[in-house]
Image 1 (cartoon, rainbow, N blue to C red):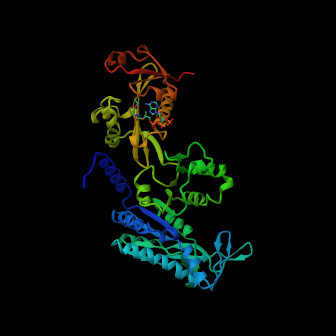
Image 2 (tube, protein in one colour):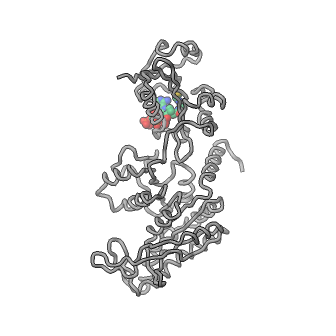
Image 3 (cartoon, protein in one colour):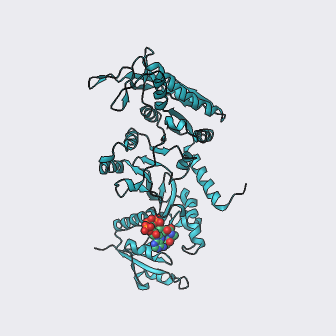
Length: 439
Ligand SMILES: CC(C)(COP(=O)(O)OP(=O)(O)OC[C@H]1O[C@@H](n2cnc3c(N)ncnc32)[C@H](O)[C@@H]1OP(=O)(O)O)[C@@H](O)C(=O)NCCC(=O)NCCS
């Protein structure tokens, strides 16, 4: 196998993610139609790899289609109320049959990848009771999940599989929603990620009204939203709430404490790994409000920052900086991180008399045009105004157009501090740009 330079970056990124997620739990709800899909073996192979790399995997297989199939074989008709199947005493044994059948399929596929799995009865359920005069009979809800046995199973390197069945204290079975089950498990064990893998198409920006802070990928996919944005998004698309049911479910899960919920189309080969190992992903992620942040650079960030600057130093866009220079300037630097991975940096150097310099602005080449550069500059402008800086300047050879779009105006040598004028490199012939903060 030949490894190219670009691949090394990818390998580094993958290792960074694995280190970050080792020992953390991912709950995977897989819809029934994906279990019957041609790419299901690939999905289970990828899940096995994640498990073997130390991530704790829990699988909740949906059984809706299988239940429909078995009930129709026995000529039993289902009725639904508020989207919930009314499971009666005649149906429940068929529902159990379907739930364990899909769980067995998952277990069989894991066995084929040398992974141990257990289908368990860790869920205590209760009846949904009578709602709006409708008796839900054997349709139930999660009452309690046995946490300790579940953690033990995972400590012993088994993947737990949860059929959509729970039992009451007398052993009476209930049909429970696998979506709710997946959310309850995630909440209980503080899962790092919850995946809903279905055949739903990816959300495309052209089909919806969306607020400005929704993350949209280059190819027009709605890639991420935080809790505040989800509310605005649902509000702007009230006429399409039916098709946005998965978004509402994801929002509910994040509100209940799940860090990140990923909606993923399982009919694409390798989508799970792509979603996990790249911040741009291939699905839609709903997350708490702290996912992206700009913060002060720490010394442990320096190698990441040098990595981002490297190509721009090579092509002459940025001046050379090494570890020592960055350590000296550490207080002036901020970094932009997504999910604890650095994707951009910039610095604000203070001069006397209310002058500041913006320098070393760089965004990871794989993440350009996502607004990261502009956010960094806006952050530094805000920081400068809080520090009572009246005028910002910067020197640039190739990026003047971009700075102009942000509001910088062309300046001259006399606009910059005297000591900076003295060190001005006439060979480099950088253009001077100014941003006035005084009102
Ligand atoms: C310039 C840079 C910081 C922009 O970061 P970014 O996160 O891609 O910027 P944003 O997403 O906020 O803005 C992207 C927009 O700016 C435009 N843009 C990017 N670089 C540009 C440039 N050199 N000149 C003009 N426009 C530019 C993009 O085409 C894009 O426009 P669009 O939204 O209409 O498609 C980044 O490309 C970079 O790191 N460049 C190399 C280092 C550098 O030039 N640093 C500045 C020297 S101090």
